[in-house]
Every structure is written in C-alpha cells, then in structure tokens.
Image 1 (cartoon, rainbow, N blue to C red):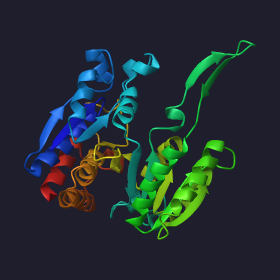
Image 2 (image 1 turned 180 degrees about the horizontal axis):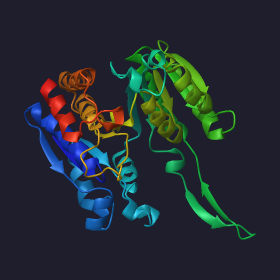
Image 3 (image 1 turned 30 degrees about the vertical axis):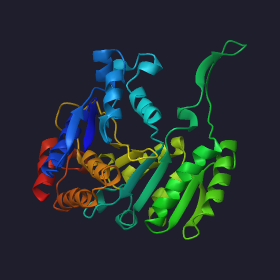
Image 4 (image 1 turned 90 degrees about the horizontal axis):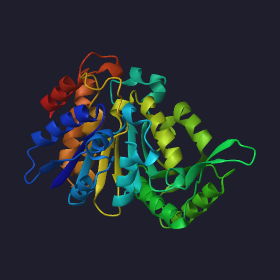
Length: 347
C-alpha cells in the first residue's frame, strides 16, 4: 500500500504530519509512505509547482495524502507557475474528476456553527463536485478591446460525457445513503447548465430508487443556511461545488473539519482538507489537523478499501470533539500537535 504524502505550503506540513501519525498508529502491514515536493515550495526548489519527479512518484502510488498549496511569495508569478496549478495539474494528469466533500455536524459542536443549533444539528450531506471541467479548465485570458479597455474572459463548458460520469457518481453515492440526489445548476441563464440538467435527467433512468431534484445554485446557497437538513447528496459542477462546499464548512462549525476525496475512474484518489495554506498562521502550531486526519480516513475507505480502519479514525475524531478538544478555530486553545495527540489517545 503506497501512499504519496504531498504536504505542500503553509500549514500543509503541520496538519499532514498529524494525519501521518494517525496512519502509522494503525500499524497497517505493507503501508509505505513517500514524500514529495509540491506547490510554492516545489517551485522554489525545482522551478515548477508540480515537478516531473513528483508526478512520476505519485503515478506509482495507490493514493495521495495532500496538505495545501499557496504561497504569497509566488503571487507575482505567471499563472502556470503559481502553487495552485499543482493541484489542477494532478487532477488533470491523474484523471481525478470526482470530488467528494462530506459535511456533518459532530456532536457537541452545535454552538460552533454559524446556524442555530437546531438547524445545524440536522446537517449530514455529501457534495459531489465535478473537477475536470467548467471555467477552471476552459480557455481563458486577458485581451484589449478596440476602445483600449482590458477584458478578462473565461470559458465555461461541459461535454455530455463529463456530466454523465459525475452524475453516476452522485447517484451511486445517494443510493448508498438516504436515496436523495439534488442536482445544482443555473439552467435558467446558462446553456452549460441546461445541458447539465438534461444529462442528469437521462442518467436518473438508471437509478429509479433515487429521488432526483433540481435547484438553482443561488437557491441552493440560501437553502444550505435555511434548511440544510433537506439535503442528502448534492451533485454539481466545478465552480458551484467549490463555493457551496466552503459554505457548508461554516455550517458545521469550521473549515478545519472538512475532508475531501478527489477520485478517478479507478482506485487512485487524492485526499486533502478543504482549507487552504493559511500562511498567516503557518509554522505556529495553531492549525486544526482534524480535516486532514479525516481525509486520511477517506483515503483508507475509497482507495485502500479499509472500511474498519477508516471508521476507527472517524470515531476517534468524533470522541475527541465530544470530549471538548478544541483548536482556535473552534474557540479553544489546543494547538496542532495537542489535537493530534487527543485523536491518537482515543484511537
């Protein structure tokens, strides 16, 4: 079982270190970890955010545990050399098209949510986000108009096969949960979204046991704070999924709690917390590592098919939170290592 550990920038190394400690504590036979450079630190060492040697290494692994990328020192670089291009490059090169972002309120964190406790306690949803299309991967640029004004432009597009494969992921996920799938789009104004909706309806014929609904993205954003308990699985495009999953993080108390999995057609997956590199607190031991630890649990479940071990980690995290283990993001005082220690004790 080969896992590539790409810690990256900012708080990435700190939170990833705690997740690695948890994985090692499981004493899994045959588990081998490989470390590689990625992001801003990779650019500074190799001249590129995703060096060829890192890409070659991950191709030989079963899964990737990813920290975070983003370095203010690199903000002035050409776009293709910025740290964030590393994650986009990995998605493209490894065919990581499906992003799973669960959001569930842990017991004891009702008061940490931005929502009323009785509303927040009902949150238990999964956002399935398409990763390889939309404006993030479409043609883009800055041009000068005839009158001399600068104009930025980005192309949003989806081919029907791209929509179909992510729709199948969404329906399968809903089938394994509570049987409800909400497809989020903006079909009232975007042709891309109209195709999205049409294809999702076609795929629904293969899943008669799943209840399909549709919602415009602006209404979905409102409903996430008004009545999040109505959602089981949400399937949506790259841009909308990016926004809605970050919003969901505040509904459950902190962005430091949300894990994610980016999956290919096979078992290869990239697992990362949804928070960024947080350079303002990097190196200070203040970051919450729970999202990264929970990402490691998703890695065990989806890429290594170790359900029992994944559940052990998730249960240990839940017990730690129920016992009052809190970092600064949740109003507590514990640092990164202390939170990792608390999870290890309960593991």
